[in-house]
Amino acid sequence: MPEAVNVKNIGLRGVTVADTKISFIDGEKGVLIYRGYRIEDLAEHSSFMEVAFLLLNGILPGKEGLKGMEEQVTDAREVPDYVFKSMKHLPKGARPMDVLQAAVPALAIGDPDIGEETREANFRMALRLIARIPAVVAGWHRIRQGLDPQPADPSLSHAANFLWQLHGKRPDPEMASDLDVCLILHADHTFNASTFACREVVSTRAHMYAGVAAGIGALSGSLHGGANAEVMKMLLELESEKDIAGWVRGKIDRGERIMGMGHAVYKTMDPRARFLKDMASRLGIKTGQSRWHELSTKVEQAGLKEFSGRGKSNIQPNVDFYSAPVYHMMGIPRDLMTPIFAISRVAGWCSHIIEEKFAEAQEKPALYRPQAEYVGQYCGLVGCEYNPPEARN
Ligand SMILES: CC(C)(COP(=O)(O)OP(=O)(O)OC[C@H]1O[C@@H](n2cnc3c(N)ncnc32)[C@H](O)[C@@H]1OP(=O)(O)O)[C@@H](O)C(=O)NCCC(=O)NCCS
Image (cartoon, rainbow, N blue to C red):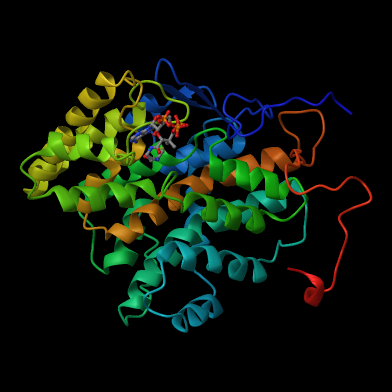
């Protein structure tokens, strides 16, 4: 038994809990690397399918390997009918992240590989999850509007097909390509809360779907993936605000958070935010909605000035800050912004699940089992005296 280390009540900040070969962050320098490759190079030259292959396999695919991956994911897009049927019974006001989280065990039930614990079976399940999560998100958006889910179009790329299944019309190719870049940027991020949740769950030998469902739950929180929807809420609230600097100052004075700013690991601007900021500017011009980029920039500048005045110049925009205006300009409803994060992050989650299950970065698998210090009522090892309800005061 290793010696106990006391790292309690700090949310495991700075505590290394495992080895991983999947991604790396230099938080001081603002560098993110997937399997050795810089995020900037991948975002500029790669595709989400190629990145998913890279994360899952550890190497970039050759031409045939990429084609095979694309074909397998395209072929797996169809969501079993019983899943959509059950979604049709849900209240139309259900939150998309809750629906998505509920759909994952439903998908597990029909997966022919469930219960088979080989790497190959887990790889096939990963491809099905990557293929079907977008279809569930798009399907729910249609179901809640009283429409039928839109069947997938095998001629379309992953991102383009999602927009097609969501809106039921051919997506603009440039917009689909921008969405593909967003998916690359969100695909993995070392031991963030949702990935850690996935890994912790499968360390018990639970199956991949159980891990992914936990990941979706963790991602939904506003301090994690839920932040993009909160950023959009803030931007909509600020649309007619004249005094942005005063608004930002007031919020920080009240001890509230400026959503989309700050990061547990980055102490400089998140490299993904830099990319998304340029995209927001370009999309603003393309769609005639430059006001969102301008407004976000004003909030960013006011935030940076305010934080630096308080000795917190390390609080800078994170990935969610500019992804919100980007998705908004793509016509994506606010409550689908976090599900889009999940559409991308599922590639990272599944890669980490496989790494955890098959101990690909450590000697052997290890069940996560941290300790907590008991600080509650204590009457010694004999226990407190138990009295029946009528004898308690
Ligand atoms: C992401 C986040 C939780 C990381 O925080 P962290 O670096 O681990 O540090 P803490 O949450 O402990 O915050 C440290 C201090 O900075 C402040 N702070 C951090 N981010 C802030 C923000 N966005 N707005 C206002 N204050 C912030 C905290 O209030 C805290 O102040 P205190 O020391 O006076 O109590 C935090 O920056 C945050 O809440 N950001 C907004 C939500 C968000 O965008 N999440 C998506 C992350 S990708």
